[in-house]
Image (cartoon, rainbow, N blue to C red; front, side, top):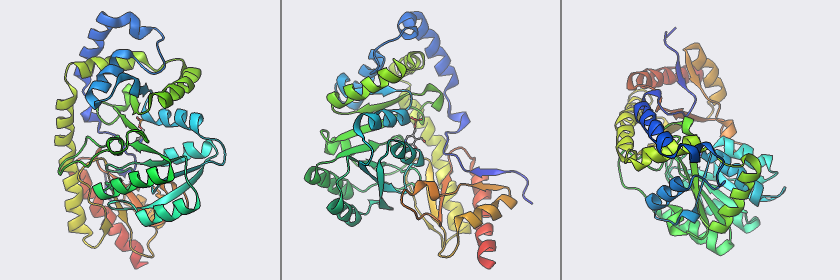
Length: 363
Ligand SMILES: Cc1ncc(COP(=O)(O)O)c(C=O)c1O
Protein backbone atom coordinates (compact mmCIF):
# COMPACT_ATOMS: atom_id res chain seq x y z
CA UNK A 1 0.00 0.00 0.00
CA UNK A 2 1.34 3.48 -0.91
CA UNK A 3 2.09 5.41 2.26
CA UNK A 4 1.12 9.05 1.79
CA UNK A 5 -2.55 9.88 1.22
CA UNK A 6 -3.15 12.04 -1.85
CA UNK A 7 -6.34 14.08 -2.05
CA UNK A 8 -7.59 15.04 -5.50
CA UNK A 9 -10.79 16.19 -3.86
CA UNK A 10 -11.23 19.83 -2.86
CA UNK A 11 -10.56 22.79 -5.15
CA UNK A 12 -8.82 24.92 -2.53
CA UNK A 13 -5.83 27.25 -2.90
CA UNK A 14 -2.44 26.08 -1.64
CA UNK A 15 -1.84 27.02 2.04
CA UNK A 16 1.61 28.34 1.09
CA UNK A 17 0.05 30.85 -1.34
CA UNK A 18 -1.45 33.05 1.37
CA UNK A 19 0.35 36.44 1.69
CA UNK A 20 0.17 36.42 5.51
CA UNK A 21 2.78 39.08 6.30
CA UNK A 22 1.33 41.50 3.75
CA UNK A 23 -2.15 40.95 5.18
CA UNK A 24 -0.91 41.56 8.73
CA UNK A 25 0.69 44.83 7.64
CA UNK A 26 -2.39 45.91 5.68
CA UNK A 27 -4.58 45.09 8.70
CA UNK A 28 -2.50 47.19 11.09
CA UNK A 29 -2.43 50.09 8.69
CA UNK A 30 -6.15 50.19 7.83
CA UNK A 31 -7.13 49.80 11.48
CA UNK A 32 -4.92 52.76 12.40
CA UNK A 33 -6.10 54.95 9.54
CA UNK A 34 -9.72 53.96 9.04
CA UNK A 35 -10.48 51.74 12.03
CA UNK A 36 -13.79 53.28 13.02
CA UNK A 37 -15.27 53.01 9.51
CA UNK A 38 -14.39 49.34 9.14
CA UNK A 39 -15.62 48.46 12.64
CA UNK A 40 -19.01 50.12 12.05
CA UNK A 41 -21.98 49.03 9.91
CA UNK A 42 -21.89 50.51 6.42
CA UNK A 43 -23.73 50.38 3.09
CA UNK A 44 -24.68 46.84 2.06
CA UNK A 45 -23.17 47.34 -1.41
CA UNK A 46 -19.77 47.40 0.25
CA UNK A 47 -16.92 49.44 1.77
CA UNK A 48 -16.82 52.52 -0.50
CA UNK A 49 -13.01 52.70 -1.00
CA UNK A 50 -12.94 49.02 -1.97
CA UNK A 51 -15.83 49.45 -4.44
CA UNK A 52 -14.00 52.43 -5.94
CA UNK A 53 -10.73 50.51 -6.18
CA UNK A 54 -12.46 47.58 -7.92
CA UNK A 55 -14.28 49.97 -10.26
CA UNK A 56 -11.03 51.57 -11.36
CA UNK A 57 -9.30 48.18 -11.73
CA UNK A 58 -12.17 46.77 -13.79
CA UNK A 59 -12.87 49.91 -15.82
CA UNK A 60 -16.43 50.50 -14.56
CA UNK A 61 -18.21 53.02 -12.32
CA UNK A 62 -18.39 52.42 -8.56
CA UNK A 63 -22.19 52.00 -8.73
CA UNK A 64 -21.58 49.04 -11.06
CA UNK A 65 -19.77 47.18 -8.25
CA UNK A 66 -21.37 45.12 -5.48
CA UNK A 67 -19.10 43.44 -2.95
CA UNK A 68 -20.12 40.62 -0.66
CA UNK A 69 -18.87 37.93 1.68
CA UNK A 70 -17.50 35.73 -1.10
CA UNK A 71 -18.98 35.38 -4.54
CA UNK A 72 -21.13 32.35 -3.80
CA UNK A 73 -23.41 34.27 -1.44
CA UNK A 74 -23.87 36.95 -4.10
CA UNK A 75 -25.37 34.23 -6.31
CA UNK A 76 -27.71 33.39 -3.44
CA UNK A 77 -28.80 37.06 -3.16
CA UNK A 78 -29.21 37.34 -6.93
CA UNK A 79 -31.41 34.23 -6.94
CA UNK A 80 -33.53 35.65 -4.13
CA UNK A 81 -34.02 38.84 -6.11
CA UNK A 82 -34.53 37.30 -9.55
CA UNK A 83 -36.00 33.81 -9.27
CA UNK A 84 -39.44 32.51 -8.49
CA UNK A 85 -40.21 28.78 -8.16
CA UNK A 86 -40.47 27.18 -11.60
CA UNK A 87 -38.20 29.71 -13.34
CA UNK A 88 -35.70 28.17 -15.71
CA UNK A 89 -31.96 28.73 -15.39
CA UNK A 90 -29.40 27.33 -17.83
CA UNK A 91 -25.92 26.32 -16.79
CA UNK A 92 -23.09 24.32 -18.29
CA UNK A 93 -23.13 20.59 -17.65
CA UNK A 94 -20.97 19.94 -15.71
CA UNK A 95 -20.89 23.10 -13.59
CA UNK A 96 -20.00 24.26 -10.07
CA UNK A 97 -22.13 22.03 -7.84
CA UNK A 98 -22.79 24.61 -5.11
CA UNK A 99 -24.46 26.91 -7.63
CA UNK A 100 -26.77 24.07 -8.70
CA UNK A 101 -27.70 23.62 -5.04
CA UNK A 102 -28.50 27.33 -4.63
CA UNK A 103 -30.54 27.49 -7.82
CA UNK A 104 -32.58 24.47 -6.75
CA UNK A 105 -33.08 25.93 -3.27
CA UNK A 106 -34.89 28.81 -5.00
CA UNK A 107 -37.11 26.39 -6.90
CA UNK A 108 -35.40 26.92 -10.26
CA UNK A 109 -35.58 24.32 -12.99
CA UNK A 110 -31.91 23.87 -13.84
CA UNK A 111 -31.17 22.95 -17.45
CA UNK A 112 -27.64 21.79 -18.22
CA UNK A 113 -26.09 22.64 -21.59
CA UNK A 114 -23.41 20.05 -22.44
CA UNK A 115 -19.94 21.50 -22.05
CA UNK A 116 -17.15 20.78 -24.52
CA UNK A 117 -13.45 21.53 -24.12
CA UNK A 118 -14.01 24.92 -25.85
CA UNK A 119 -17.21 25.91 -24.06
CA UNK A 120 -20.92 25.08 -24.15
CA UNK A 121 -22.26 23.11 -27.12
CA UNK A 122 -23.97 25.89 -29.08
CA UNK A 123 -26.36 23.60 -31.01
CA UNK A 124 -27.57 22.18 -27.69
CA UNK A 125 -27.98 25.72 -26.35
CA UNK A 126 -30.04 26.68 -29.42
CA UNK A 127 -32.30 23.67 -29.14
CA UNK A 128 -32.79 24.27 -25.40
CA UNK A 129 -33.71 27.90 -26.19
CA UNK A 130 -36.24 26.76 -28.77
CA UNK A 131 -38.10 25.09 -25.86
CA UNK A 132 -37.61 27.46 -22.88
CA UNK A 133 -35.89 30.82 -22.39
CA UNK A 134 -34.03 30.99 -19.06
CA UNK A 135 -33.99 33.89 -16.62
CA UNK A 136 -30.22 33.64 -16.94
CA UNK A 137 -27.44 31.42 -18.24
CA UNK A 138 -24.81 30.71 -15.58
CA UNK A 139 -21.44 30.36 -17.31
CA UNK A 140 -17.90 29.86 -15.97
CA UNK A 141 -16.02 30.76 -19.16
CA UNK A 142 -12.42 30.68 -17.87
CA UNK A 143 -10.74 27.51 -16.55
CA UNK A 144 -14.12 26.17 -15.57
CA UNK A 145 -14.88 24.45 -12.28
CA UNK A 146 -15.04 21.43 -12.51
CA UNK A 147 -13.84 20.69 -16.06
CA UNK A 148 -10.94 23.11 -16.64
CA UNK A 149 -12.48 24.10 -20.01
CA UNK A 150 -12.21 27.65 -21.35
CA UNK A 151 -14.84 29.04 -23.69
CA UNK A 152 -13.48 30.02 -27.12
CA UNK A 153 -13.86 33.56 -28.46
CA UNK A 154 -16.22 32.31 -31.16
CA UNK A 155 -18.54 30.62 -28.67
CA UNK A 156 -18.53 33.70 -26.42
CA UNK A 157 -19.82 35.74 -29.37
CA UNK A 158 -22.50 33.13 -30.11
CA UNK A 159 -23.67 33.05 -26.47
CA UNK A 160 -23.99 36.84 -26.47
CA UNK A 161 -25.86 36.84 -29.81
CA UNK A 162 -28.29 34.25 -28.46
CA UNK A 163 -28.77 36.23 -25.23
CA UNK A 164 -29.72 39.26 -27.36
CA UNK A 165 -32.00 37.28 -29.65
CA UNK A 166 -33.83 35.39 -26.90
CA UNK A 167 -33.61 38.11 -24.25
CA UNK A 168 -31.94 36.42 -21.29
CA UNK A 169 -29.24 37.54 -18.85
CA UNK A 170 -25.80 35.99 -18.52
CA UNK A 171 -24.25 35.35 -15.11
CA UNK A 172 -20.50 35.14 -15.77
CA UNK A 173 -18.59 33.59 -12.86
CA UNK A 174 -14.87 34.14 -13.41
CA UNK A 175 -12.86 33.50 -10.22
CA UNK A 176 -10.04 31.70 -12.08
CA UNK A 177 -9.72 34.11 -15.03
CA UNK A 178 -6.59 35.90 -13.79
CA UNK A 179 -4.77 32.63 -13.12
CA UNK A 180 -3.71 32.09 -16.74
CA UNK A 181 -0.34 30.35 -16.95
CA UNK A 182 0.06 30.62 -20.73
CA UNK A 183 -1.74 31.85 -23.85
CA UNK A 184 -3.93 34.90 -24.38
CA UNK A 185 -7.18 35.66 -22.55
CA UNK A 186 -10.50 35.77 -24.39
CA UNK A 187 -12.75 38.81 -23.84
CA UNK A 188 -15.14 38.53 -20.92
CA UNK A 189 -18.83 38.06 -21.71
CA UNK A 190 -19.31 41.27 -19.70
CA UNK A 191 -17.13 43.20 -22.17
CA UNK A 192 -19.10 41.73 -25.10
CA UNK A 193 -22.54 42.36 -23.61
CA UNK A 194 -22.29 44.73 -20.61
CA UNK A 195 -26.03 45.40 -20.45
CA UNK A 196 -26.94 41.69 -20.32
CA UNK A 197 -24.16 40.32 -18.18
CA UNK A 198 -23.46 40.23 -14.47
CA UNK A 199 -19.77 39.44 -14.03
CA UNK A 200 -18.50 37.91 -10.81
CA UNK A 201 -15.09 37.28 -9.39
CA UNK A 202 -13.52 36.70 -6.02
CA UNK A 203 -10.38 37.25 -3.96
CA UNK A 204 -10.72 33.71 -2.60
CA UNK A 205 -8.33 32.40 -5.24
CA UNK A 206 -6.16 35.56 -5.32
CA UNK A 207 -5.60 36.25 -1.59
CA UNK A 208 -7.33 33.52 0.45
CA UNK A 209 -10.85 32.24 1.17
CA UNK A 210 -10.51 33.78 4.68
CA UNK A 211 -11.02 37.33 3.38
CA UNK A 212 -14.49 36.33 2.09
CA UNK A 213 -14.44 39.01 -0.56
CA UNK A 214 -16.34 38.47 -3.77
CA UNK A 215 -17.77 40.99 -6.17
CA UNK A 216 -20.39 41.37 -8.88
CA UNK A 217 -20.23 43.92 -11.71
CA UNK A 218 -23.16 45.03 -13.81
CA UNK A 219 -26.30 47.09 -14.12
CA UNK A 220 -26.53 49.44 -11.06
CA UNK A 221 -30.32 49.00 -10.78
CA UNK A 222 -30.01 45.22 -10.53
CA UNK A 223 -27.07 45.52 -8.12
CA UNK A 224 -29.03 47.92 -5.91
CA UNK A 225 -31.82 45.33 -5.67
CA UNK A 226 -29.38 42.52 -4.94
CA UNK A 227 -27.74 44.84 -2.39
CA UNK A 228 -31.15 45.32 -0.71
CA UNK A 229 -31.44 41.54 -0.32
CA UNK A 230 -27.94 41.62 1.19
CA UNK A 231 -28.93 44.43 3.56
CA UNK A 232 -32.05 42.55 4.67
CA UNK A 233 -29.89 39.49 5.30
CA UNK A 234 -26.68 40.68 6.94
CA UNK A 235 -26.99 44.50 7.11
CA UNK A 236 -23.49 44.96 5.71
CA UNK A 237 -20.71 42.62 4.56
CA UNK A 238 -17.56 42.00 6.62
CA UNK A 239 -16.02 45.46 6.54
CA UNK A 240 -13.01 44.45 8.64
CA UNK A 241 -11.83 41.85 6.11
CA UNK A 242 -12.90 44.04 3.20
CA UNK A 243 -11.00 47.00 4.62
CA UNK A 244 -7.87 44.87 4.90
CA UNK A 245 -8.38 43.64 1.33
CA UNK A 246 -8.76 47.24 0.17
CA UNK A 247 -5.56 48.36 1.91
CA UNK A 248 -3.66 45.37 0.44
CA UNK A 249 -4.96 46.24 -3.05
CA UNK A 250 -4.23 49.94 -2.60
CA UNK A 251 -0.60 49.09 -1.84
CA UNK A 252 -0.27 47.57 -5.32
CA UNK A 253 0.12 44.03 -3.98
CA UNK A 254 -2.33 42.28 -6.31
CA UNK A 255 -0.18 42.19 -9.49
CA UNK A 256 2.90 40.66 -7.75
CA UNK A 257 0.65 38.20 -5.89
CA UNK A 258 -0.87 37.05 -9.21
CA UNK A 259 2.66 36.53 -10.57
CA UNK A 260 3.58 34.50 -7.46
CA UNK A 261 0.46 32.37 -7.84
CA UNK A 262 1.28 31.69 -11.49
CA UNK A 263 4.85 30.72 -10.55
CA UNK A 264 3.50 28.36 -7.87
CA UNK A 265 0.65 26.79 -9.85
CA UNK A 266 1.96 26.59 -13.44
CA UNK A 267 4.49 23.83 -12.55
CA UNK A 268 1.65 21.93 -10.84
CA UNK A 269 -0.47 22.05 -13.97
CA UNK A 270 2.56 21.00 -16.04
CA UNK A 271 3.23 18.11 -13.63
CA UNK A 272 -0.38 17.02 -14.07
CA UNK A 273 -0.25 17.11 -17.87
CA UNK A 274 3.17 15.39 -17.97
CA UNK A 275 2.00 12.61 -15.66
CA UNK A 276 -1.15 12.08 -17.71
CA UNK A 277 0.95 11.84 -20.90
CA UNK A 278 3.27 9.38 -19.19
CA UNK A 279 0.87 7.17 -17.23
CA UNK A 280 -2.49 7.61 -18.98
CA UNK A 281 -1.62 8.50 -22.58
CA UNK A 282 -5.00 7.36 -23.91
CA UNK A 283 -7.04 9.25 -21.32
CA UNK A 284 -9.63 11.75 -22.45
CA UNK A 285 -8.74 14.92 -20.54
CA UNK A 286 -9.04 18.69 -20.75
CA UNK A 287 -5.70 20.47 -21.18
CA UNK A 288 -6.25 23.86 -19.51
CA UNK A 289 -3.88 26.82 -19.70
CA UNK A 290 -4.64 27.98 -16.17
CA UNK A 291 -6.95 27.73 -13.17
CA UNK A 292 -7.26 25.01 -10.55
CA UNK A 293 -8.76 22.02 -12.36
CA UNK A 294 -8.31 19.45 -15.04
CA UNK A 295 -10.86 16.75 -15.74
CA UNK A 296 -10.70 13.21 -17.03
CA UNK A 297 -13.47 11.28 -18.74
CA UNK A 298 -12.87 7.62 -17.90
CA UNK A 299 -13.03 5.03 -20.70
CA UNK A 300 -16.50 3.75 -21.69
CA UNK A 301 -17.72 1.17 -19.19
CA UNK A 302 -15.45 2.44 -16.37
CA UNK A 303 -17.35 4.20 -13.61
CA UNK A 304 -15.94 6.93 -11.37
CA UNK A 305 -17.68 5.31 -8.40
CA UNK A 306 -15.74 2.05 -8.93
CA UNK A 307 -12.48 3.90 -9.52
CA UNK A 308 -13.02 5.91 -6.31
CA UNK A 309 -13.48 2.79 -4.20
CA UNK A 310 -10.43 1.10 -5.71
CA UNK A 311 -8.35 4.32 -5.47
CA UNK A 312 -9.08 4.64 -1.74
CA UNK A 313 -7.26 1.29 -1.27
CA UNK A 314 -4.21 2.99 -2.77
CA UNK A 315 -4.61 6.02 -0.44
CA UNK A 316 -5.82 8.14 -3.32
CA UNK A 317 -8.97 10.15 -2.59
CA UNK A 318 -11.10 11.17 -5.55
CA UNK A 319 -14.42 13.04 -5.79
CA UNK A 320 -17.67 11.77 -7.10
CA UNK A 321 -18.47 13.73 -10.29
CA UNK A 322 -22.24 13.28 -10.28
CA UNK A 323 -23.09 16.47 -8.35
CA UNK A 324 -21.63 18.63 -11.13
CA UNK A 325 -24.23 17.40 -13.64
CA UNK A 326 -27.65 19.01 -13.12
CA UNK A 327 -29.61 16.59 -15.28
CA UNK A 328 -27.72 13.33 -14.88
CA UNK A 329 -24.64 11.95 -16.56
CA UNK A 330 -21.12 12.31 -15.20
CA UNK A 331 -20.75 8.62 -14.28
CA UNK A 332 -17.30 8.61 -15.94
CA UNK A 333 -16.31 12.17 -14.97
CA UNK A 334 -13.39 12.86 -12.66
CA UNK A 335 -12.29 16.32 -11.49
CA UNK A 336 -8.62 16.70 -10.59
CA UNK A 337 -7.89 19.84 -8.54
CA UNK A 338 -4.10 20.10 -8.63
CA UNK A 339 -3.23 23.47 -7.04
CA UNK A 340 -2.95 22.36 -3.42
CA UNK A 341 -0.62 19.42 -4.25
CA UNK A 342 3.13 19.51 -4.92
CA UNK A 343 4.39 18.37 -8.35
CA UNK A 344 5.75 15.20 -6.72
CA UNK A 345 2.37 14.41 -5.11
CA UNK A 346 0.64 15.09 -8.42
CA UNK A 347 2.91 12.70 -10.29
CA UNK A 348 2.47 10.03 -7.64
CA UNK A 349 -1.31 10.61 -7.59
CA UNK A 350 -1.73 10.28 -11.35
CA UNK A 351 0.45 7.19 -11.37
CA UNK A 352 -1.85 5.66 -8.72
CA UNK A 353 -4.90 6.78 -10.70
CA UNK A 354 -3.59 5.09 -13.86
CA UNK A 355 -2.95 1.85 -11.91
CA UNK A 356 -6.40 2.07 -10.37
CA UNK A 357 -8.14 2.54 -13.71
CA UNK A 358 -6.21 -0.44 -15.12
CA UNK A 359 -7.21 -2.58 -12.14
CA UNK A 360 -10.89 -1.62 -12.45
CA UNK A 361 -10.90 -2.29 -16.18
CA UNK A 362 -9.23 -5.69 -15.68
CA UNK A 363 -12.05 -6.83 -13.35
C1 LIG B 1 -16.87 28.80 -10.07
C2 LIG B 1 -16.88 29.21 -8.64
N1 LIG B 1 -17.71 30.18 -8.24
C3 LIG B 1 -17.75 30.59 -6.95
C4 LIG B 1 -16.93 30.02 -6.00
C5 LIG B 1 -17.06 30.49 -4.58
O1 LIG B 1 -16.13 31.45 -4.33
P1 LIG B 1 -16.17 32.37 -3.01
O2 LIG B 1 -15.17 31.80 -2.08
O3 LIG B 1 -15.80 33.72 -3.53
O4 LIG B 1 -17.55 32.35 -2.45
C6 LIG B 1 -16.06 29.00 -6.37
C7 LIG B 1 -15.20 28.36 -5.34
O5 LIG B 1 -14.60 27.34 -5.53
C8 LIG B 1 -16.03 28.58 -7.72
O6 LIG B 1 -15.22 27.61 -8.14
